[in-house]
Length: 149
Image 1: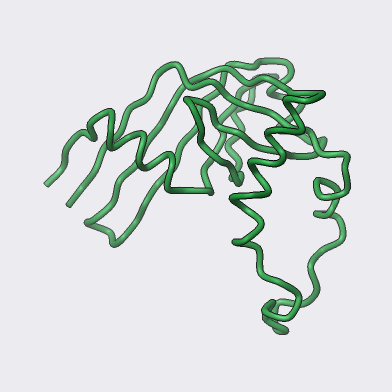
Image 2: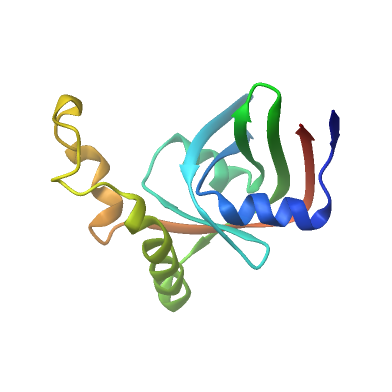
């Protein structure tokens, strides 16, 4: 059965998950990229480093955010939200980083649990962990959710 998620179910999906996708458009291109995030008080909170995502969001802060929960091909929930990107600095950026670390750090495998077949952690992805992260939030003004069960 297909259906619409209630506002409470939408909030729950956004809160439970930590991987979503940001969709942005600039320079005649649409760009969708996966991100780790924390959802809190109507905001998607995240951190990143310089790149196409930041170029696009700085030139056009209107964006969308999407997250899925897939149990099977016929048992899923999906939420999309539309909002405005805002780059953070100072104390608020520090508070957001503390929030991100508190929720996401326990999910990152330690060096001893990292599967050897996957190789070492790439050094080019450590830039957001060494104090030069770009911290941001997206205020979701509109949300929609669907499901199949």
